[in-house]
Length: 183
Image 1 (cartoon, rainbow, N blue to C red):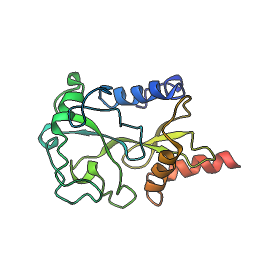
Image 2 (image 1 turned 180 degrees about the vertical axis):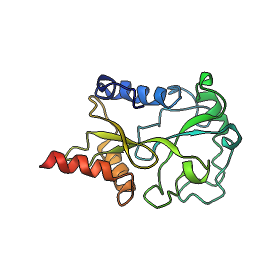
Image 3 (image 1 turned 60 degrees about the vertical axis):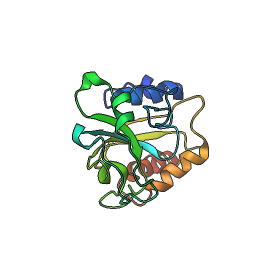
Image 4 (image 1 turned 90 degrees about the vertical axis):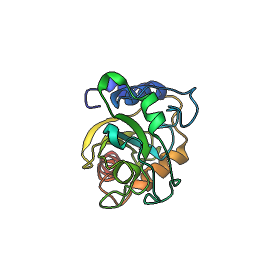
């Protein structure tokens, strides 16, 4: 994701979103059924913003109830195999749910269900319009940022995305960007 250009991160939202999927090893499958590789939700709501790469042996892991607000079961393996770019090797990638990521250690799907680190997380910056995002790594360090144009995810989703990480390590860079912009 750090190799994406400013143009790729500041263009029309749908193109930016497709670039994020590609950088994370995923196809843009908006016509597939949920559970069968559908990736139209990825980065388009407040919660599916963690790009998680995983070893093949954990892609069929299910939520045993350890991840709050996620269905018990939550079988994602078939969809992960369909949507992941095979040329990147075994295992796969998915845009996992970020709820619980404001805790330390993170209690989200990536860390608990798949026992993985995130490759990157998209966090909307809490400026007046919530129109800029920052991509952070598993340690909360900035990898890239963008201010896309066009039809962004609904404002309520962008606000909830920030609220969900507030108080944790993943919110810090977004808060710094918002603070610098208001000075």
